[in-house]
Length: 171
Image 1 (tube, helix red, strand yellow):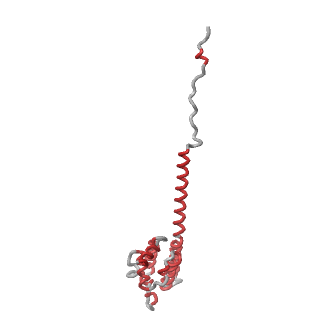
Image 2 (tube, helix red, strand yellow):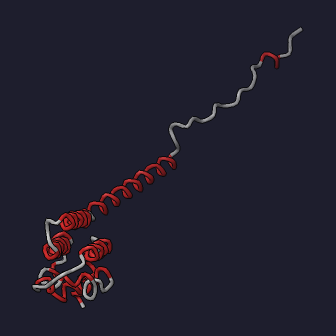
């Protein structure tokens, strides 16, 4: 007698599960979008870091100037004159605010006040940055002046500060 023909059949095996490689087209699209987003973020951060370089350099120069003052190598007026030169170079040359090139005295102090959004320069310790530094009896509290200058640099932005003065010129 013949055996059961069903016994000759092999067991049923499930199909192989799909592997993780190659990914589906949707995953390729997600990967490309993520790579572009990361590249954009890295480029934006690098560009912002690069644009702030003159402000960082001015901060270092002012700190070096304070160190020279504290060690007794320069006096108060030399500190004020050199700090003023650093600010002029930063604002006019590095940030390109050409309207401040010929500004001096009270107008210069008002421009510095405008950046800090305070009265630190026209009515505070920063008034030595105007024409009063040319007086024979000019004195200043260098530590307070240095803090005002650091505050000014903290409020200086590579794109917003030039726009601030461009809007004032167009009014």
